[in-house]
Length: 82
Image (cartoon, rainbow, N blue to C red; front, side, top):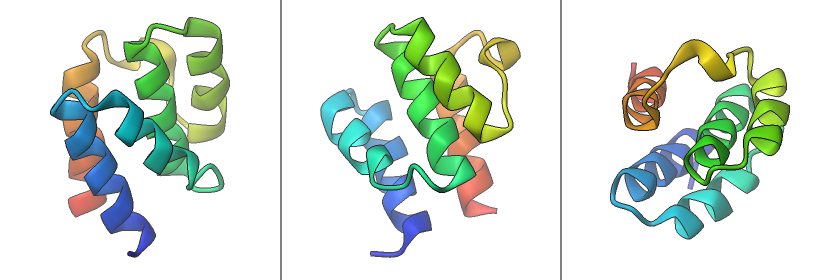
């Protein structure tokens, strides 16, 4: 499965409440900025703020950019499906 499709599947898993599945998929793409963004959002949901902030630094996004992780997941999916 291509990176983009796998990250979309991870977003869908997160939106469905399957955090572990989403996290496992996101971890496979830690060299991709969007993968890092998703990884950051997942740790925000956990919540694990220090870990989340670590991944935001690699993503080009900011922890404070979205207050609601579900809205952020929707934005991530939109970025992946442009």
